[in-house]
Amino acid sequence: MQALVESGFRFKNLPAARYAMDVTFQQTNVPTGAYEEKKLYYSGKHSLYGHEVEVSLVLNGFAIDCTKFYKGSMLDKTIFNENIDSHLPNLAKRTGETTLEASELGME
Image (cartoon, rainbow, N blue to C red):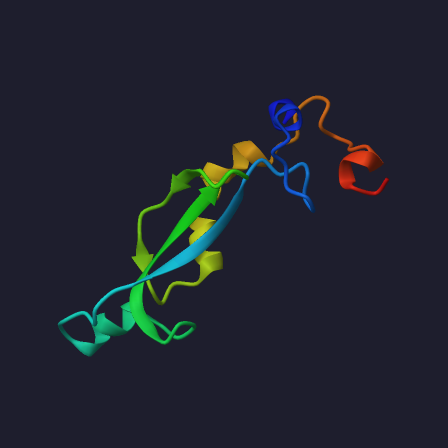
């Protein structure tokens, strides 16, 4: 966290966050085979067939982690839960990070 403070690369609304993560959808062609297998790749949210991956980014846009792909029908929360072990070490506060000054929160 100290390195983030010194570099100036911090999220405006979440200054203590080390990185951001999101699940992104990658469209593919309609899979061949039985309907039961095809529907696993269909995303009702996007109304398309495809894969999903969880990507973690630092503030400058550099991707620091990308998971394996998941079938398009899988929920984002389920993907996050399956990868929670990779996030847990970064969720813990370190010495000196338990409080933020009001000026650090943009509440000057």
